[in-house]
Length: 321
Image 1: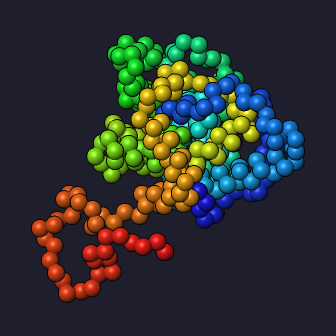
Image 2: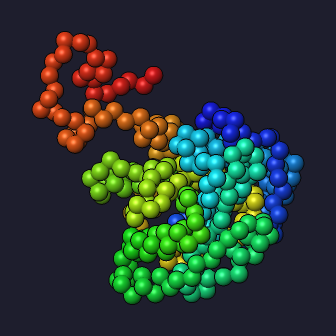
Image 3: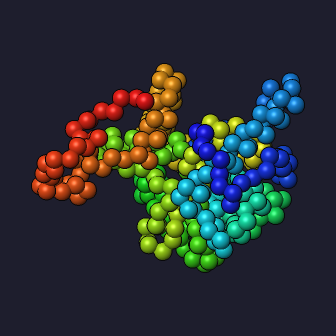
């Protein structure tokens, strides 16, 4: 999603840095390999591929910088806890935040935090090695939430809700221990759209993931720097940067998730109706509360004729402009 250039506080130069790497939960990528292979296009024309990666990285930096500025996500002196799951989204978030950190006139620090949930076969050495190579401060929190989820959730039932609650509790504790002022999660634009429709279809609410909010326990500020970024761009970026992706064998492998069904619906809409997804996403930031049915937002008993014309009035549908 293209946005206006970021303010000067987060403006970035046009150059691209080479990766020093070997080549919340976002491990839902179809690319479930430790090191993604090079694409055929890159093998055929490396100069063109490098140009496309350069352009993609500039766009991602601009989108993340704009989201940070729009929602005042990061301030001078912040200690940002970047939650790193091993999936493409959190890797991309950390990589872009590190790039913006170098260019920001307002100093802030970053500490990467991973929760080792003790899933069978989890390659515990991958993330520490990657973070050491990037010279990133990090903390690995170990807690066996995997066994708890497997014990309490019946076979075939959705594990996401319980798994998410357990993860949040651990991450909040770690945030206190390391003195983090912000908790950064790797949810992107498509996650926000899917959450909106999950609440609409199954929860009976107009609600989604906000770019910035106060945590469940009221003790932390949670931010989502990828709010303007498309998932497909993150997938391309993860391949280009050769992030050592780690597959999720818990919730990421479930095929009956309502979130996956909603995501498939959105992909079909994007293919059949160009522009629809952009319009829906823009609508989430352009709410006309007076034209909804929430009696907490509107005192309908107090509505009276004023004799003053209203441009919105009783217009229920706004024609496309």
